[in-house]
Image (cartoon, rainbow, N blue to C red; front, side, top):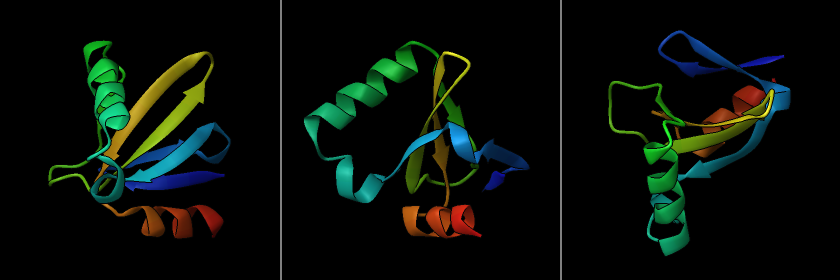
Length: 82
């Protein structure tokens, strides 16, 4: 099953490790460090033209990716369960 995340992109449901709300967790030092390191390693994919509200961590085929999306985490979780 695939989860639509915007900008004509979809993620395989089984590859999703976590869905995180940027408003609630971006103030934590470890989260900021994680996102900075992921960006430096080229693991960040922007799936929005707007300000991102959440990020999705995926792991598939040994590759980790962080997708910045325009929807909040509850919307994405709802799409994942449909």
